[in-house]
Image (cartoon, rainbow, N blue to C red; front, top):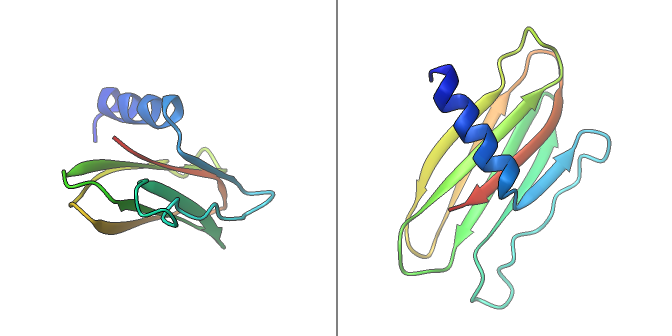
Length: 108
């Protein structure tokens, strides 16, 4: 991914961040699935892996924007865009060689 597109994806994730899991807490925010009407995302950190999951409760396709911020500058940050079909769940992950600072996932 070129630098301009990577910067745009990172900006989109930061601007509309649905969930945020800092490494210090490494907790997960459950997706808002309980009502059956809200789409949502959750993130978690497991060792050197950042993991995000998004659930789409709408009848239209959406795009999951996923970002893993690695702690060491030698690690490249991970940015992904994934299609989430109607009424489905998508999971993404990224690995850092040192450690994960934070993970973000958002549905657009």
